Image (cartoon, rainbow, N blue to C red):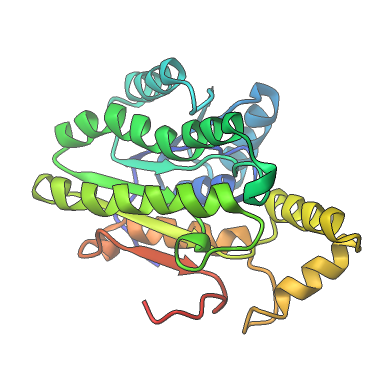
Length: 263
């Protein structure tokens, strides 16, 4: 796929592994200069070096916790100072704690609000002025198919990723006149550490093997397999490019057909 991304500046969050890393890899492969962040500096540096080696792109690692306002401000400032601007923001964060309503306390809810919802709001607050200075840009929020079809045992994710979708839809309307497109990508069951964690938590609750839980998940996917992170990353690159220039305010599942709803 030919894109216009060569030389564009992208910031991808939670990019040391999993879906964030896949998004950064796809953008770098299309010629973007990419800043990546995660909380653990060593792991992030290794991921950045690997992406740079695979793509030949310039990749800047910036250790940051996106649930902390000061870290978010430093992250965006460092990216803009190093590359001279910002064209694409990809928000992402580790999933909130799994559990059902009766197992979750007030502290769990507050931590999840900061990690899953407010991190997106704060990143947009810092990034939007820079996107406006470039005459437009892209905001792509990595959420979950739970915004389309709630997933049992993920009360916090079901509630707060839906909040991100509502925020994104409203922001797309407000930023459309500025040429800033805002979309969500909603991965389904994908071969990541997060899916392994969910399978293990479910297995522990039910007293069964994690492999049995994974097999049960796949039975609900018409394509009959887990997704691969790169399949989500390639959609991010498409939405960031001119090929996606008339798509905004929407949530696109990448789920192998898991979601059964019509919309």
